[in-house]
Image (cartoon, rainbow, N blue to C red; front, side, top):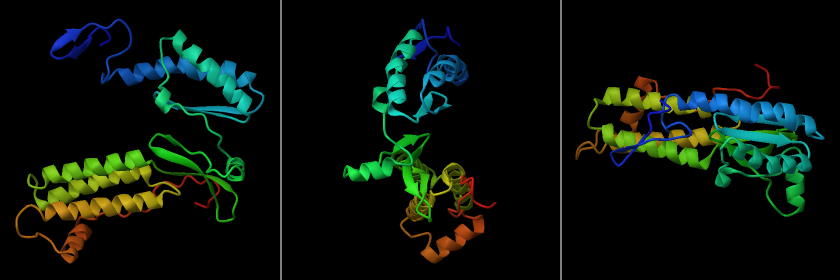
Length: 247
């Protein structure tokens, strides 16, 4: 697979380095490569040289580095480019950010007349929030980009398949797509985004079912009856990631 090359405009081009994009082997090789390039390097070199606590979270080629002190973060950022270059890798500058985040970030930002920083990671936007008792809490919501993409994919799918599948089968497949989204995003503190997703997908399903012919297929009452028949999901929280809440 590494020697297969790439195809552009019908012509095969050999490659000397890297793995072909889209290859089923690429995710495995990138995980192995970054385990040595990034994970072990961070654990054995960076963390030991830090004044305070330091943590690295990585999924495939996306990673998040957290530091207690800004000086440690600056030192890591300065050495990261050199480390990547040594192994013929590059950072995506448009995706690389350096922000203040955590327990005191909100108060410091407010004193400057600013909003506390937030960041996107694995489809979620992480932001500084508070519990009902006004103490600090890291909260998450579906990122705007991922929400737009998910809604666009669902709308495009229901539009294309509305005339290709019987109503019952179409609703069952739509339900499976909605469940797939909720199984990932329906986590603690993200109910608003999940409610919005459900509202938009339900309305899109109603709209395109009624465009299959000149006569409307459903009233809202009839449509909701059909949804109940297929067991249309509700946007309840499916994964509780609050470690201190009772089970």
